[in-house]
Amino acid sequence: MTFGEPLEKTMKPWKTLLALISLSLPLTFSACGGGDSGTTGTTPKPAGASTIHLAVIPKGTQHVFWKSVEAGARKAAEELHVEMEWKGPILENDRAGQIQVLQQFITRHPSGIVLAPLDHAALVDPVKDATAAGIPVVIIDSGLDGQPGKDYAAFVATNNKQGGIMAGEALAKELGNKGKVVLLRYLEGSASTTDREEGFLEVMKKYNIQVLVSNRFGGPGASEAQTTSLQIMNQIKEADGIFASNEPTTLGMLQALRQNELAGKKKFVGFDASDELVDGLKKGEIQALVAQNPVKMGYEGVKAVVAKIKGEKVEPNVDSGAALITKENVDSDDIQKLLGKK
Image 1 (cartoon, rainbow, N blue to C red):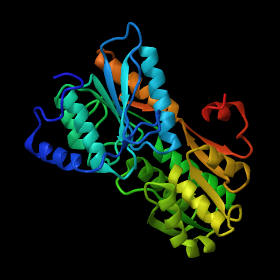
Image 2: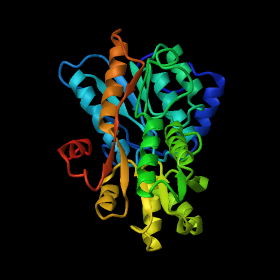
Image 3: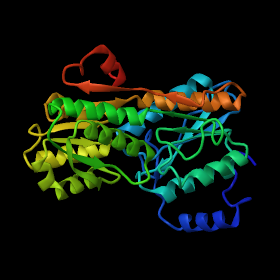
Image 4: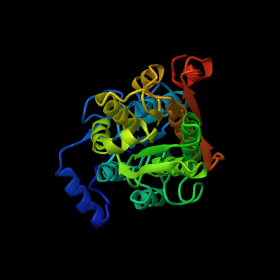
């Protein structure tokens, strides 16, 4: 089977049924590079390129974070002279959509796949199918049940538990190690954000800081997170501090605080560092942001899968790094480089 072969060939019966159901739904895929819904972004094949064809599947294609991951992946693909296709669901709660994309790629048999799984359990079987078909898979950003180096080639990501601890320590410091806080979670099944949330809660427990809300999920986008934040506004008003665990939840919470004239009046620590969030930090509406290195994550993910394809040694776990951004260090050279401004 070759890269580009039709979906219908050699599929298992249950997969055929899922594919037919999925294909009866509106097409909801987008490439961040083009910005048009329903398109797929492929890195042009350079002169003298190898015959390696990669599929890179993000959790979603709307947020700034994934555009940065894509930029890093494309940079590695260009340096290594390999062809890369970027495709994923628009929204980060479309598990069925992501499974469909992965299955389509498996039937086309790319040389390797880089995947940011939307769900730590739901993507296990499709990844097993890819591995059984002889397609190496590198997991990025968010964990997948199984063992890196055994069940899949490698795991490239932020140390999310440590990132949550970093955020918790920053908020505790702002509060003088006392007070009441609200946690806005992201989505059930998302391993990366769950690790951050649990790391944050460990710190709150260490300092005996009261957690007023710990079980509310913001949803896949900033607008959903804003709605959820407005629904718990009474608890937010009572709280001294707030933590939100990724870009959309941080932005949604910020918008809700602004709507209630509370921005800057509550100690607020977020995760990820889009331009709008950094602007909120500079205005004093956010006290700290834990910033990942999405460009490095995409870059190292592609490098790892190409190394595996070539039979080279691949480290099973690669930490793509994170840093705490505050108003005091945001303009430093190191942080500006992390934000892609230098």
